[in-house]
Length: 196
Image (cartoon, rainbow, N blue to C red; front, side, top):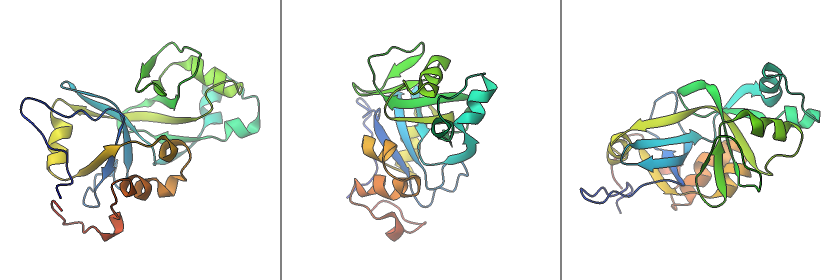
């Protein structure tokens, strides 16, 4: 079985709304044992946010910097994630789609959006935002053809995403849970493994 995505010269399979699951041999400090949700992928490149790398920063820290007071202390204790090594001073909120429109949102699917505007933080702080959300600082980005090359080099597994892994699965179980969507136990893969 070929684990990596097949790459065709004339028709490339784009991975928007897929998980990128780091192979055990990927030792980049930004992506070791990571799961990245791909928000956009085209011939120009790809971008996504890593969903299982919590930071020491809490939502209350960010809200305080932008002069927003949370309605409850529980809201302020939401974990902020390292979304990737690009624009690490900028926030990105991955969330379920709501009737409310935000100033800067990307529709990833009919049910999931990525928003980078401050207005959503005000709603979240007032307990009026999306039901499900994950806040990151930074994102992961790939130039044209770069992600395809990394997949061909067997650095990543990929599969269609499952929103329950993003929003409901405990952080420490997201890497293994994402791989289990492919029927793969990452603990059984050697760091030196090639194509299975």
